[in-house]
Length: 340
Ligand SMILES: NC(=O)c1ccc[n+]([C@@H]2O[C@H](COP(=O)([O-])OP(=O)(O)OC[C@H]3O[C@@H](n4cnc5c(N)ncnc54)[C@H](OP(=O)(O)O)[C@@H]3O)[C@@H](O)[C@H]2O)c1
Image 1 (cartoon, rainbow, N blue to C red):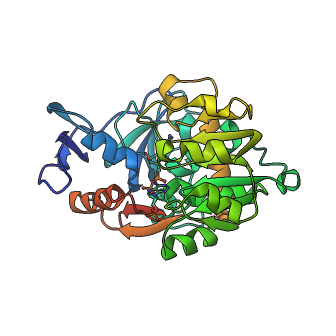
Image 2: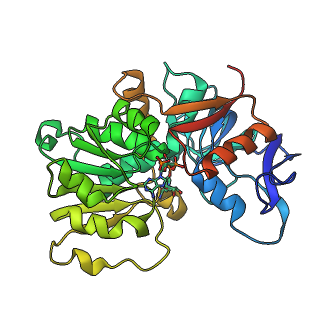
């Protein structure tokens, strides 16, 4: 089978930053599905893994954590899927990624693909939907089944137009919350308003003043999706007493948790890979989340966050997608798909 990966941690414009190579087709065992991949997306984690290291790897590393495809064969313990099923998933941080003709993935972190979406629209969704869902409904502990009860609650979503923000705003809106999203340009402002935000503030300005100008002294929840260091003090100021903050980005310097003491506010991390990385007993919840996301997409309750589709899956198109994500100005998602 063909795959795309890297042996050296090079800037994307270098010839060998991503390379195509051949390897034997994998065999599905246990809970694994072998999936024939039809479309993939690129996330900031791809850029981080590709750039973040030194030296020459012995064998090429295959990255890519978003795929849609068809189940080609199944392991002897598989119970959730059959050969021929259309599936979508983000995959595991410990295993070979989706930039490959075939990929092994544990059925417990795979969902049935939505039926009404094109391949590229579907491939845009898994990693960011899992992240947004877990952050909102597990780490911030918002109850998605209490839409009426949530109506008075406000959430500030920092980086509303990026990959995760574009689905987090929709899910928070669906859960009944008043959604304040941050965006800094005319095109991102109209994007977030079109993806579930009720109000917009600018993350390039002082967020405390921006939110106060809207008439909110505090917000009940904050979801931080870009630059934890840069926004920490603003979040500590804006969070309501007993409010909750979650972040999906890493701090580069120590964060001062003491700032939350008097408000007795809670802080939680979200890492989409945690469940599969540690093989937690609730790992199968990612299968359930993805199935629910597929249903919401098919019902038109939420929509795909696809913004840019490239075709076919090859080195040149993957490089272009990496370049777009590296810009830190992405709006929605970029996907590389084979022809339908
Ligand atoms: N923990 C996890 O499980 C997990 C999962 C997914 C992603 N992540 C991480 O979360 C981050 C976001 O991922 P993503 O895919 O949503 O990113 P993305 O799509 O690349 O985000 C791009 C957006 O970031 C905005 N932005 C740039 N600087 C900002 C700032 N200082 N404050 C607020 N927004 C800013 C840009 O808006 P403007 O151009 O308008 O400024 C742009 O629209 C990345 O660091 C990624 O590695 C973590």
